Picture 1 (tube, rainbow, N blue to C red):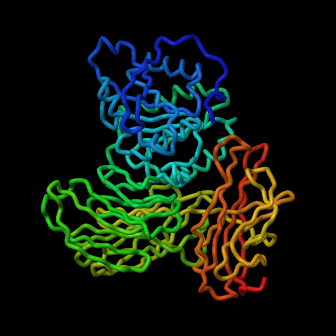
Picture 2 (picture 1 turned 90 degrees about the vertical axis):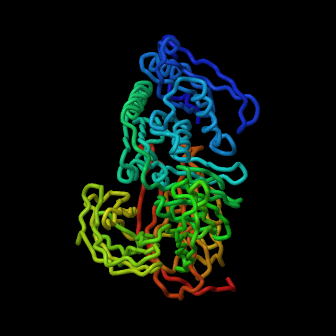
Picture 3 (picture 1 turned 60 degrees about the horizontal axis):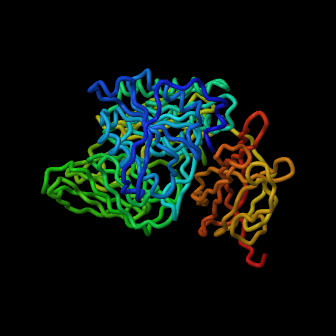
Length: 588
């Protein structure tokens, strides 16, 4: 979507204008031109200035917006670079570090991440967030105005969907801001992102502005960045990062893989003590891609030549590999892994880590009701962990723990154990809660999606290889085949299916949630709503499958969610579902 629809007419010509600069791009090949706004008095001073990189969509900056940006820069000590209409797919997204190098090498910038920002409107807002999430070590603050909430990113040959709902973890150490207008077709999607980010991002701001106040919001957005320049966040002591490109570098860590299919390399809880690694088809709960080989190189953390014990724990089966590895002449260590989920510990001593959790006595977590987790702890060090007192804490409001601490008994190296914790989030509409398991000075984060209470639904269809009339692109009806099975309308072992829910003469494919051990719920698809509401967003639906070893007669419990377009705004409805696993009728 172009940004032009935000504005009507140009204002009075500004006191400053964009200047063009050209150079030979190594990333994109050939000549590259970028435009820059310089503050008043730039030529006569020796002062260095912070920089805002402004991205836009598939059209040039419209006159009213361009004039507004120029007027702001004329009055404030900041350089603004027009980042252009960069595509999130292919090599264009890899161009940002080169552009930063060119700008810092050409102009008097404050060439550190704390004084470097990215911003944009509409699709440019999405681009700004994608750039900040891919290069958090280059960017100190990011903002968007009515930004598109998702898009396809990564290599041109195998792009993958990037939805801001699921990538808050990429923004460690960055101040973030999202603004949306009251008449914006993106308002629903912005609200959904806000419902997650406000509880998972410690330096997040959200703003809602009145229709017609887009230009005023530009000033408020740039004010946010000026404040961020005055008070930049420190680099995180520990970070998480998911990247759609097979090869990348972040915070000094280098990752190389042979992946040639859509997906993400996901690093979690990364520090000089270790990390968790996986390669997944999608986030957060997508299937791993075990056949991918990944090589991960650390920054120069360690004394050159020192020997350290590295413990590799494959979480799918608990298989352990331990190796003594020496840091190279630069103090780096290298780790060779597959695409499965691994906990990696770098320690000659004890090291406690949380690898995940299961929900006890329920198939999903309900906001406003007690949630009981069994949290899995591992000792991924090379010495025993003594009996530990685990304190449970949350930075979110309205979270109460039934017992604020628990005792975790001693763990030998590469041994694991679960510890129960029960908490209640008072807000019945909360979408996520963040808690910490605290042991001494180690904080181990856990994020738990929450769902509202929902009524049961009897009237739904199971599409296990059936063709039915469903809504596509929000409002269009089409005959679509879902799932893989014998098409008898029942879920049997080995079958993949969709849950379809009636709505005004047709069906809507539902996104479903469950922790049922008989269900593999790692596959998800998207139905784009861009043709209907110009939002660039989509409705998600799940394609779960019944595991082949599940016994017929087992009762499956699921929570189903659908989005329904409405003149007054998108509606979201939830229902609980229950159905038996069926005997496979091969003759159907």
